Each structure stands twice: as structure tokens, then as C-alpha cells.
Image 1: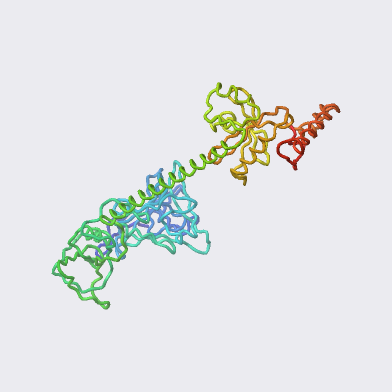
Image 2: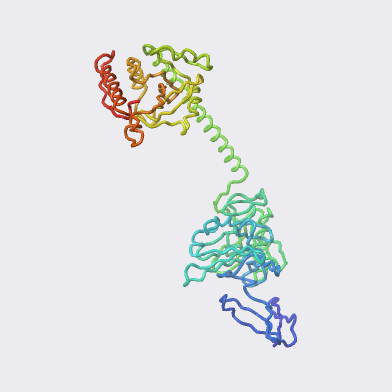
Length: 505
């Protein structure tokens, strides 16, 4: 059998090369249906791969690869045809970019479109309907870096193919790389040049069948020029209003230049397939339009910043006003000594020697005492809110009750509670040392009870043994004295409705 290479030129077959008689075996690879493999059979029974169709795809089908074979250096690339009649390599190629983990379309070697990174088995700039039944496979090792796909539906065989203009057909969707002229960056298009001054946003070449006037035309005789080359040349030439193929095999270019009017007869019966430059109204912001958009964005952002600044200022003033009112309310309370601004150990020297007088503590000092309301300092949770252990600069231990943010108690209720506690002074009642009001924070500072509450001992099998009858009797007597004081001898008559072991220190 002889191997022969032939070339089609102007519809004439030319023999370029033929071999001596060799044994060759052409077979369909069962592992990859549709892959035509040409192998050479050696006398010793071994085979040498000469050529396979999957290495030079014109249409991408499942298991076909895009990428590079590191062993052979061969690149798997899907290339468009020059025209529908001439299957020579055209201007567009679909390639796998392993570094960016994305697909790219090149136009004469320059990237004009990118798919975006592969995330969750989807590319950002490939239509969803084109990816609906696809499962992608990425291989990256010492042998190859490749991309391929398979169908999730065994009954369907998805195909990816190029048109001569660079539009990539993917199942039911399209990647419109033919609209990536190099000046816009929408839909995955890559920008590498500015829009020519003579072109307006929305200008596109529209196919028409016409009898044009051939008085103002120029020609590109190069048979390697296809549709996209003619389009790019006309687009960048401000005097060009349209183009058509020069030869019957759709290669070469005829450029039309109409200075004053377009002299042609429009017909759908016969004529020349001509691509005229028209404004489709698909406006892509550019030049003056872009400036207005940027200017509008800057103005809108500035106004938003000013508005937010005013809002924050008003809110801050509101908080400061509320803070002032809260402190004024506490200052008007009876039997209170205001110690606002205490900042040293000396300032605290005699604070706690004033009997039942109420002191207002600085919020910063409360934060320092409780280590920023650390969870390690938390003693428990009451109806008022969480209770923390604190150590004042004098070294005295205190219990800090912090009003819960979800509490419905307002400033007036807080004031009433302080007034009530100030009126109640008894040796068997926990002493209130002071309070702190800061913005939304309302805090009470009590003397610290190191022995904890009665339930800590009473309901524990081992600690309950520490309470003999004499101690229990003393506790009962102290509770009774406290209740008697509240009900009969205090300035304010109080009925304690929540008496339980956990509130008895």
C-alpha cells in the first residue's frame, strides 16, 4: 500500500508526495469512538502511530482533548476553517490555558476571548445551556496538561465547532467570539485596542444581498484571507463601509468605499453577499459615554459618602444627647455621690467608705476591672443579665451586673431600680456600690460574695455536709431578718416575690 499526500488548490488535485510500498493499518480506536487512527505495522508485530484524527480536530466531541502533550510536544487545538469551502486553518483557535485553568479563543494568535476560571464544573462566560449536559475533565501532570468533556446523557453526543467568523457553537448555545473586536471587555471579550475614532458604539457588520457600485472598491488578493481577516481590515480602515469575498471559494476581500452615498440596489433574489457596517443599537460605552458614566459614578459615590457621613454624625449626636440625659437622671437621684472621671487608685481610696452613697463609675474602669467582660470572669446569668467578677484598682473584688441588650428595661426602670436599692440598706442585703451608664450600656456594681449562693451548697451531696444544723439555723434567721426588714422596717415596703436559694448569698 502507498501513502500519498495531495492538495486541493483552486479545485485542482495536485500530487505532492507518495511513498514506497509499506504495510499500514488504519483502524477505529475502540476506546475513543470516532477517532481515525493510522498506524504502521512492523515485521516484528509492533505498531507505530502515524496519525490520528483526535490530534487535529475540526469538531470537538467527547474525550477529545485541548492542551499539550509534554512527551511529544504536540498541542491539541480546535481551529476554525478559513471559509466554508476552504478547510485550511482559519483565523480562530480554541485552546486550553493550564495556568489560568480556562479556555481561550485566539484570533490570529492574539487572545480575543476567555471563558473565565472553571468553578463548580462551569465556565463563567460560556452560556448555561451550552454546559447543561457536560462534565469536564482536567488533567495536569508530567505527561500532559489537557481539557476534555463528556456528556452526562448517553443518548446525546455534544459537539463544539467553529464558524468561519469565530463563533463557537456549543450544543444549544454559542460563544460569540465573533463580536470580540478587541475594544470591548464584555462576555469574556478581551480588550487590546481602542475603538477607532470613526466607529461608533454598536457598529457591526450586517449581511445583505446587494448589487453594489464597483466604482469605489479596493481588493485584497491574498487567498489566505478569510471572512474574519476582511472584517478586521475593514473595521480598522475608516474609509471602508463594507466588504465581500473576492473569490468564489470565499477567500480574498473586496472593500467598498462610499464617500457620499451607498450606491447599490437592495435585492433578495440575486446579487453579492456583502457585509455592510451598520449601527445595531447595541451600545457599548465608549469615549464620551464612558466619561459620563465615570463622572456619574464619581458624583453618586461622593453624594453617598456625604449622606452616610451626615447620618453617622446625627447618630453620634443622638447618642451623646442620650448619654447626657442618662447621666443627668442618675445625678438627680437622692443619696448619690457623682465620681465621674475616677482614674487613679487614690480616687478610689474613700469611695467605698461612704456608707450607702451611690457612685457613678467610668465605663473604661469597669471594662478594665472585668477584663473586657471576659467569659472567664463570668459568674452567672440572672434575669437582669450576665454577672461578671471584677477587680478594681484598689484590689477590691466586685460583682458587675450588665443589663442584657435584649432586656426591655429602659432608663426610667433602671433609675427606679437604683432609687429602690439606695433606699434599702441592711446588713443581710447585698450592698450596691455604684453604677455605670455608657451609651446603651447600663451596669450595676455590687459587693462581691466569695462564698457564692446558698444553692451552691444546699443541692450538692458533698458540700451540703458543710452546713450543720447551727449554720442552717443562722441562715434561716438571717433570711427572716432580711424579709422582715423589707416588709416592715425599710423606708420602702417591698414584697419579695422571687425568693429562692440561688439569690441568697
